Image (tube, rainbow, N blue to C red; front, side, top):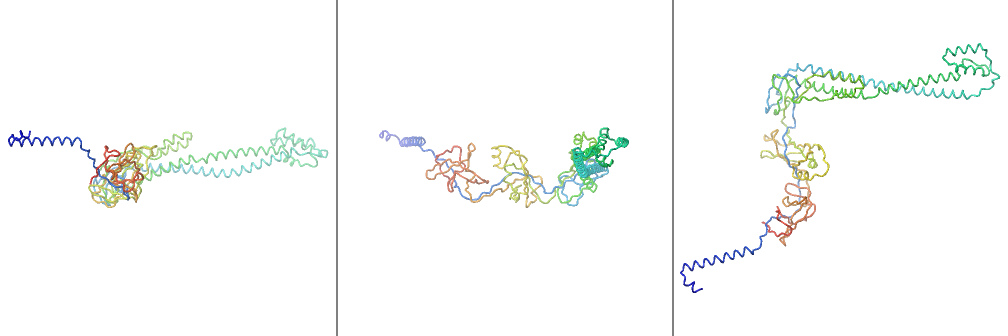
Length: 523
């Protein structure tokens, strides 16, 4: 074959060699691709270390002024002038609007009348209660004395019945004329024939000189008559006490007191609004107008015409058994019936001064928020120091463990329906802090020190199980290991168990990574 190759021309020899080299190279490449080892996936690794973690709560909020001045108008008042519009910046002392209050003079008088009637009804009811309590004290003394008298009479009657009348043979004899005269006297005294005969028999059997008047007084019949009178008096006293007891029931008095207090509040509130309208609305501080609901030359009509206060109609309905109370309450209610008594915001002024950013927070996140915690408010490319100034209470509680709620709270975006309002005070605001604008808020919540931590990017989850891949530098392999985590920040997790300081964890592990896989370490 070599001789044949030598007979070829120079060009053909070169071509043949070139083709042979290419064939060998292709075969070698094919063999290499077939039998070459799989490349190891490359990952960055980082050692678990001891340090501090500053946990944060991230959310969005809305800028507000700490001082909002609301100017309230009464329905039906005539607006004389309006000197501002929404967005206007005003200074302290600027007149915002003026009014003609003559159209609501009658409404103010109705409020005063309702209060006066309610107060008079309460004073009368409370006076009756006080008088009845005093009457009970006095009548209790009379009842006690009468009961004592009755007990004494009963003992005397029993003693008389049990007395052993002796020496009848020495008894003084009375003539029939004397006894008949005595009988007539006793009849005139209201005694029955049987009672009279008892007295006559007693006299006939008595011994010695007997005083007829004393005998009458000491006789069983006379004592029984006194006993009956005393018992009748006791019944009368107890009846009167029951009347007093009924009058001490403070239910009616309490109703009148509640109505009086509400009517006083209604009157004083309306009077304050009336005076404010009469004097005209004046800004108490520098600020910006955010709401204007009045128009010059027109009567004011509130957007919300709902009324507040005690619902007298429901109270009247519950007092149908007491016609006097129902009638009085109806009279009080009629004093303001038909009055245009609803009120509403006419102008709202947000005062310049301290600014806050308010936000809502779920009940799980709420546990980590405390007044005084530092925060950062970000808007329009600038960051501002802030501090938590208010944390409200949760609105409601849900029973059971809601995994989705916990998961969302870990990201700082709790979707839990139970929420509360919290606020941060912006410490050094400038022109970029605008009332009504949305801002980003980062609150520094719990801070822990000297704890084992790993990067957030090293943590993975599978069926609610948290784990990491630990790199073995000797074997170049990874081990899938379950870990228990604690407090976290934007960058790190606290490791409570499952890792030791210095162990290397894989960053951003892919789903294809499995226990025992060999990897190559980047960098």
